[in-house]
Image 1 (tube, rainbow over the protein chains, first blue to last red):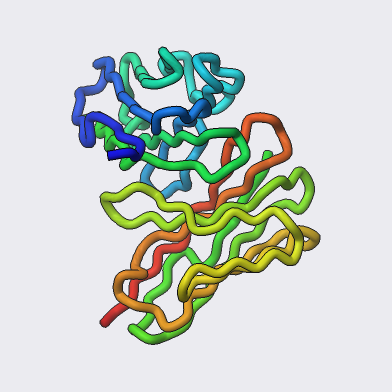
Image 2 (cartoon, rainbow over the protein chains, first blue to last red):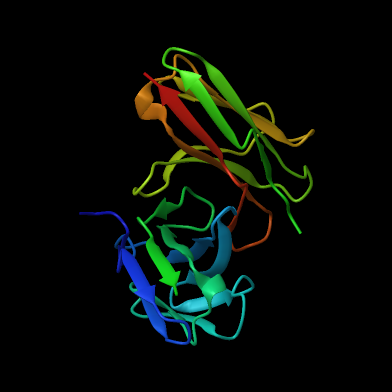
Length: 113
Length: 113
């Protein structure tokens, strides 16, 4: 398919473990965003990539969170030493240029026990 | 800090009813207002992107209006159908240079047959 894909779709982990979430954007989309939605809250911005650079990381909640993007394509969001408050749906979105409609993936539901 | 408010939080209507929801946002630092529909287990789907005061957009039975001077947008659904059941998200795009979206908490619509 030509849409944004994310993996895994569901991840259950134990507190303290590290997790890696993957996003495959639409081919040719230079801008990529990560968002998350915790239970009962709205979607919150985490990080923005333009190409392989991340000019806006202001939404990353702590230094346990990091993300990278390679080849102006795949992005991975890594959460180290997961905590229960990290449980959320993590969404990735891509677009051709920063001020157009964002195309979202189906999300990864992360549950930290 | 930009704050986007949506109301109501949830709504239950009968098939055939028309309905509307509100998105409020600070009128300064505005670039664009986005509406998304998010069905359970699917990706958020873009409905409208509006930038100009007085914009009105329509897609089938769904339409939206924008008032940037007073800081609100309305989403209307005419003759609701069960397949309209979803969470409707409003998001503000500020005038910074990253294009990140600031989301409201959403309005969850349930249409009963």
